[in-house]
Length: 171
Image (tube, rainbow, N blue to C red; front, side, top):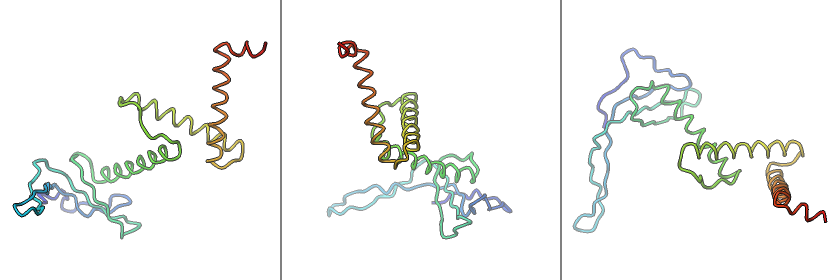
């Protein structure tokens, strides 16, 4: 339910690549499911006490594309709200890349520092795989597979040598 429109009179609705349609303060309903005496599920509407901001924009280049954004930040401009959500999508694409292409399925740390270290290490490995791909003129999947195999061999050889097995092998 709309409480108040935040669009000012004579406000320029052009916000870069988008055109502002609605910028309003709203209250949402919960729609909690409740089972009545007959066993049917009904949805009881209860208003949420918090207020939210609804921003609806239309893409200037593709007018059929309309984007709805809900936020609890009333300090941002409408352009900033749209840009933050666009950046959020870029982050989602990046995370999908890390999970699918680099086989990172779990983040092993819940601390900010631990997550940053894991992401940096993953990016370093991705860059090394891309360098390997380019140097050997391979497809990305083949380069990634060979890079992993050769890296494991190097790690195994160096581990065996540092454990003292290198000197035993030369005898």
